[in-house]
Length: 348
Image (tube, rainbow, N blue to C red):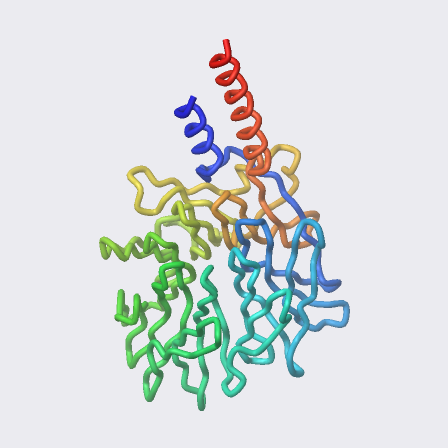
């Protein structure tokens, strides 16, 4: 019986690639543009969109409450760029880094510098960029907003903090004189004298995903292995935008006719990795949708991105079939039946 329960639990928690996806339109802030950036394991989404007056504002979306305008500090725009599993949100507002929680609302992380908070881990550690006199430095903020300068910018040097995992490992962009590359844990990583190199996300296994020279790229910190241009070599460009803890990654690619599609990648450094055009994985009832970009994926396999329906772009969630909630219900149902049968057997 114990083996049976463990097998069912593995079925629930293992976010394996689903055969099909349903599409949920998460709405807008009243304007013509909505761009989701991240999704956490509760299925909560953040991003930014235009309002009915044309202002760009950060948003927070949940199934129960819909889309919430997070407002702005100052007179500029605001963008939510990441959310952790505690519903703490980071981004930038009027060119300054912010953190948002339900109890504090939007507050500045660094009130004395321009910059951006780009990622936040589950320990409330934030990574981003500080701008001082037009010089960009990669920085890290603690839960108390104490700042650590990871790589200081200077004459001919510019850095950005792009990704952080729950172990505190970080990655970002390094731009030096004649060189563009990544850094990993404050140490210079893969470099190029020709191409732009941009990391976008990082999981706890040390898998960093992004782009290299305009094409999908990844770096394995443990093995120091780089993969490049692995989506479709005949496309014009591509980028990996998000990766979950099991190693599934998502992004977008631009075809030769300049149209784009969102993709799912089944493990970049796996033995038999596969790229899936998400449009080929949609449930037939959603065949009239076109998925243009996949921007993030959570550990349950839910994907957030941009879809098009009848010529209009929408912010969407792609839910694997069966949905994670269905798997949880199935687990408890089967586990309860197994427990009842085991108890009945012991009483006989």
